[in-house]
Length: 519
Image (cartoon, rainbow, N blue to C red; front, side, top):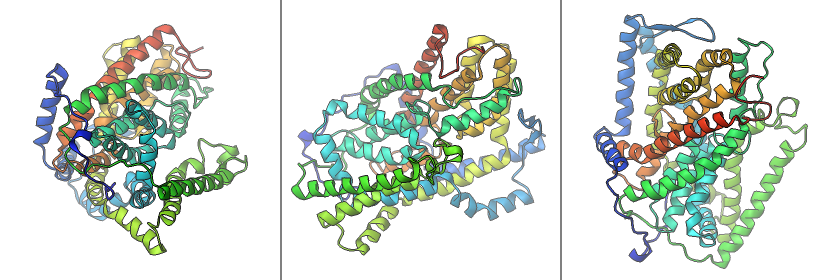
């Protein structure tokens, strides 16, 4: 997001940054940062990764590397991209890889609304309203809570929340990068912690049910079967994320010397604009409610379903509308919009600010496509599962090992459902034969799938975070960003595993009708 409305703040308004103590954590992060920053520019890095995948796929194919897929029982072979067919795919599908890169359309569509709202001053006015009336001690807490709850809206939280969090931090004299990484860590690292059952719960439950039916053909999975644990996890992740942000991440950042957002009191015109923006938001919400509240609403799914429904697949345009229409209302009242040309111009400026992300997305899309075509990711996942299965661990140590393997594989395969489609048919039946409920196995997987999200470049939204961070620090390297995010992964991982162990020994239910052991 651009900062067209920014003004300089006086030095006394800047929050002083305490010097970082050279603890073991800081020394480790210094090494990560130094090594990482010696890497090339992220665009160049994705090109290098793509070339490495092409070469590795060829040698893996020559070596006859293959595994048996646990679900289909079919062999999965390494596919060389250094062949005539591989070259044809690389050349003819380059545009398709870019155009169909999942976050690309999601980001750009969302930014049509968000960018216009920022351009006319609506977001700035909202921040003034919220920040000036809220205790500064609660700012980090509110951002982290919003990040965790944003998961109910699918992937939109990765796009909307970090830039707003950066502005909120900047408005109170704190480092904007600390705000954005706190938001991203909450959304990504707390990916499976939520108070409300959402589409991901239903999606993973479908894979779990199929895997469990290998052992018990009558098993039926409940999308809420992990709900108690995941809801309780919110109360673990929130204070941890706040502490990491305030005590580890922000003190390591250099003093922010870029543009500052001045927070004057709202004018009468701005207050009127916010009033009409609120009316527009309520009117739009009412229109959406008409499509989803009635049991036969047009955005409901089969048999009136809400979790798996056109409504859940429409969240991105809905979010765009929730920013776009209030922005137009606000702009008209405050004279920031005088004609339809101003609206079109504002949306165009929002798109122009996304140039670096679009470039990053192009090269990231090629790399991820090559990785998928080569089957190297699937081979690594299945090999890792077979390794864990064969090392002889049993019981709780095996489950903890499964969490760690899932976390490691998440560095290479970003999709939660894709990994579970591979791991589920191996581990769900195996743990069922040891007496564990499939819900417990799924829970272990979900912890592992979440904790390394903040640091993996394979997670498509990492490129968005990097592009956004560079708007505040053009010299920020990949190593610096990973070093900033790493404490969230390490501390979330240790704490969540300990929480999992405690839940196991207490024998608490995981969700409605689901426990640790099979009935």
